[in-house]
Amino acid sequence: METTTQSVAKEASAMRLKDKIAIVTGSAQGIGRAIAELFAHEGAKVVMVDMDEALVQRSAGEISQNGASSVAGVRANVTSADDCENVVKSALEKYGKIDILINNAGITKDNLVMRMSEQEWDAVINVNLKGTFLFSKAVCRPMMRAHSGRIINIASVVGQEGNMGQANYAASKGGVIALTKSLAKEFSSRNILVNAICPGFINTRLTAVVSDEAKKRMTDRILLGRMGEPIDIARGALFLASEDASYITGQVLNVNGGMYL
Ligand SMILES: NC(=O)c1ccc[n+]([C@@H]2O[C@H](COP(=O)([O-])OP(=O)(O)OC[C@H]3O[C@@H](n4cnc5c(N)ncnc54)[C@H](O)[C@@H]3O)[C@@H](O)[C@H]2O)c1
Image (tube, rainbow, N blue to C red; front, side, top):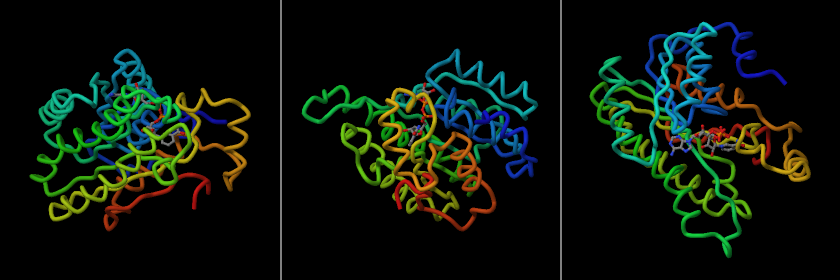
């Protein structure tokens, strides 16, 4: 299987995001990194946000070395309102605007409900749902002033159909879908378009822990017969961030290979 960098390098850039300013949370690795890399290749200036400072700096450096336009790595925790506001403030100081926010940072802490601790519940809701709220809130004023903006929230197929052992994660992602629709309604008059992507089963660190047997069970359910790659989700995000999606808001884009219809 090709790496994201190889896929991106092979694709002719149409510069669909030329001079756009994008913030991508949780982008040190996995889906977020693929989105940052593809957006940079398409001409965007990308602020890569992650809690893992060393990794986000390294990833930003690698993407820049591959000839992309301006990419910067920043440490921030999406559960902290101050961190979210500081990222937005410095992006505005540097670039004067924010066009695109990708709320991608997410975690799992799986357990059956009868064994799930309050801490496991709270941690997942805080990062996945509250973090999406806090960053959306932090960007909404500058986007409203500009009468323009795109917010794309990375939810999950699990938020649509639920999953055993993932009640906290399913509830957080179901919440992200409902939050997406509410933000779309609140922000539409200022031309801020808000959509969600529901990835299916994607090959990242998050799913690396799944046993081979469980992977086979999941893959058997996918009509296209394979796990997705981070670049598959990045292409969906590029579409929603581009001019091609200028009449689409409040929607959920399923990028799941036919895992859930
Ligand atoms: N991999 C999948 O199969 C899959 C499926 C559906 C949805 N998703 C969603 O896609 C998103 C990305 O997942 P991934 O598989 O790339 O995961 P990943 O673990 O590879 O990457 C997630 C990144 O988020 C960062 N992060 C975690 N908590 C953070 C916080 N509080 N503040 C800032 N950064 C934080 C991590 O450091 C990490 O770099 C998540 O929201 C996840 O729920 C993934």
